Image (cartoon, rainbow, N blue to C red):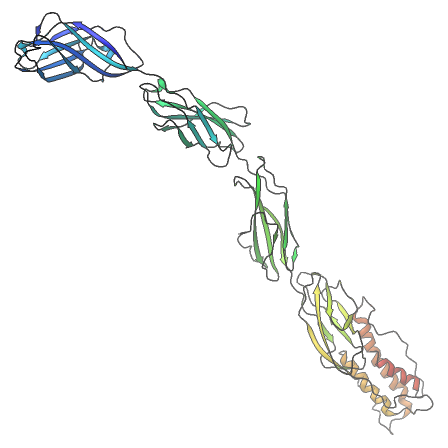
Length: 544
């Protein structure tokens, strides 16, 4: 702290029953200071030291105007100092000390008995004002930001008579991280601390950079702020780009996992972190469900789907700061639906056949997705094994000879994804043929009504097996009554009735010849009964 003195000479003692003004002088005017106190040192005397005096002192400017006024009511001399003593008058600091030109005194009681005399002085105690000091360290972190970064600074200091009152912060922005625009005011922080930590705003545009600067503010005003301290630059995080490819496989889902394959995402800041993956489902023509989250970065998903229900996925890239790209949707996958059960058209349940390797005439059911099918059965061989479509007609035949009696079957169809239908089940009866006269020998065995009638019965049994109507024979054959001249017509009837069966069986699967009845040529019957003709019919019955 320094002191400037103003002094003046009051001359010989002057009673304070009048206002006594003393001119003062005090050297050059001062600037850039803080006035700490202004104290007048008044030299006064009395001729009645038993009194207590009241004196008013005023500091005046060059125009006689009052700068400050102080009244003391406690001035009391004693026998040792009544001829002259110095009294202090403290005027405070609420005025410009450079305006001091004079000081006046006036007594408020017994004024004719107190005097001002000799040298009068006024001491102006002051402190020169110095600038604040900028922070010695200032930085902004993180350098790549998704949210507002934090500016930290330390090492600031106030100046003399210039305590810290806060900090002013500005920013400059750049599109390329090299060329920065003009400094722009950001905010002012009020604090008395020598350090600070505060959030600052990001650039308004992604991928733009910002740097900041700050200066220390002081109580002495803007003329005494510190210089600027500049920080490092930060960059606003760029959004990653979405994946360019996303597939979910298989498109027809049976069981297990759906594999999710996505690629092509990129991040301009090279901080790609993971991928968000979601899924949605729907049934039939319903709307898709709300998206549901899966584990980040997942590449395989085991869904819970009902037959015919669909699922799709979407993916987006996520960078290390949590910024996300747009979504990219995958194809949809559908839960495979089993085909309908095949239909065993022939035989009807419980029918009888005389072939130890009986045939089944089957039509495949519909597949909701239009997938190809294959028959699934045990103990039977199909005329076609695979690649079948809805409505395909196939012939199944017993792989090995059956024993006499009931022959059961269970037939399913499986689509190309091995989804199996329910089974078509049933049974038929295999009866080994039993003929009158097991061997009809030519020229030896006489052909009888029983021979023809049992063939008629068997043929109609076979026709019923294949869903054909029973033949109403043109003539009833009665032993001992029916003439042999009708034999030829009777045989031709049998042959035709059997040929109907051959036509049905061999025409059932128009694509494959497997399991067809082997081709043969009927023996043309003559007028007379023939053992060869009869034996051929007997044999053909076992082929049907």
